[in-house]
Length: 147
Image (tube, rainbow, N blue to C red; front, side):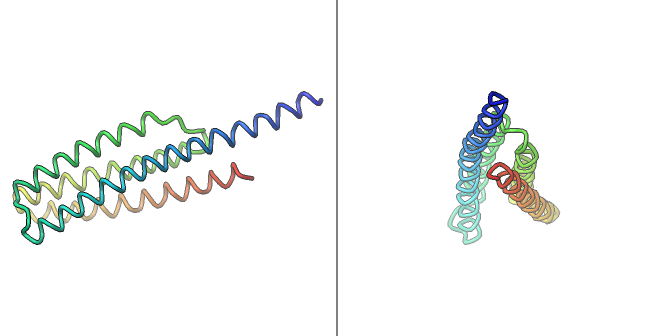
């Protein structure tokens, strides 16, 4: 009986440790995404002010998409505890929407097609919604582990 009790508390402690370590990993990845997003938004602002050319903005945008795709791959490298798997799927979906949104924004810059800009804005909204759902799921799972 004592062995079962010890095993139970040991397992619970290990789950907390894995959850904490995973939380640090996902936080680091989210910060990388936010930093890259900030750089891209800053470049768009400069482009809107005509301080960088269309060609330069396209080059920056293509490099940005490469970086975002590398960050997307990092989601597949994560090994979340089961309780966090839904949040990882939603956060990954958010980044997928962001990538697609930025592809459409670059399409708009390249050819001036307003439909590309509209689609970009729609995907940005979907990305935001998926991110919010992912963060809520993460926090819900985290509070379950802390109990």
